[in-house]
Image (cartoon, rainbow over all chains, first blue to last red; front, side):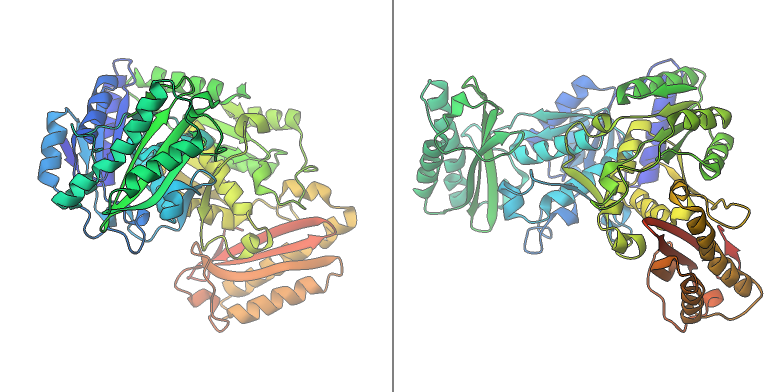
Length: 301
Length: 301
């Protein structure tokens, strides 16, 4: 496994790998797994999916400053390069791209990639400018790596929808592969930010997955749950937990992220439905979601 | 010469050409010449430059609706596909990409690529949103063609600066090649929009190049012309022509497009200096410019 900290070195490596295989008449498939590091089993599942579908797997680790707001956790975002490299090696990554902030932004960027509409709700409303930072850095990574496939976790369902929209609108020649949420045995969705949680908050945070998975069971059991009822149920379940401060509970179409009528029965919607929550425990903001298909089957949990 | 109207067909062709040459251990160089058609000798000079530097030359012709304002000339923008294809063939283009609006924008784009600061002055001030449309469509074309080199005329000096900024900021793996303005014998800068001019306006429009080339002569002769004097001289020369309505006369650094002090001597500036004018003749808006280097040598005229 190779480790690159400079854009030009990574490019030279990729070109040479591509040329070597092209000499044998084959265009190799490259998979990109873009992350902010502090890798966990969720990231490992992305790497395994990428490993199964590509000749060359590139993992990027970059805590992207322009997707953090001024009062967010950029400075304390957890980092563990040694452990990350071990996990990458174990999951068979061919190359790890670990650029510095100066390498990615030698001068402040004047250019931004913006996706409108899809970024106005959910995390886009709570974190102004966040998705502009995400789409801008993902554009940069795509141009550097030129992957055939790129892997994103569905825990950030809005992010996956926004990036898919960007790729379609701008004709990026890449396939976006959304991958299911990975959970602890007790239901907590894996997140690098879980490390912030005190034992008490860690326990309280189970209310997120519990509220979503309870709803999922009802829908799968054939109950005609409406958008309004689902929203009320989730808010009620979370509010019982005194440590939890709800940022949002939103039920929208997926991947269009459009508002839905409160009376709409989830299982009868014409599109897939995203039920997404963001909740703060102390200074730690966690997100979780499920997606319900129109056949009433919950997926991506 | 091949003509493509669909993105997927062009991509298939490019991949097959690249694979064929890669089998012999060579990565071919692709040059892109993006245009809005109604080609003239200025475009031909871009094609010749591209032909000399690339294995594969792709000309795109697309009148991009999202770079036109609501009261601009989108509907009457001149078109002549037959003549364009003849010129492309004559200049040795390998492929012409001629997409429909529906092919490029099957649904209205939610994604925009924006370059800040550089787009706030000059044509960016006169044509709000224009450059967002340009950078967005150029991003799409880059992703479709994946060129090694892309050719832009310096008549749109601000456009060349904005696109170079975008390419640097977003790590596009392409070299931007600015090419000199091509002029008629009497000095008029070639433009597809010259076709709009009545004989009287065509004659009056010579005031643009005359004002700029007079300034150029002075600078080349070693005169210590300041920004303020240059601006006054150009405004005075153009104002003598009653058919001319000045949109702007701007003197800024190039390629940073920053404002300059009125007392700054052009030939002593630390960066190159762009002297750009936009003038209306009836409904037709023309632009022209010169660039003065810090050695007092005028280039790109």
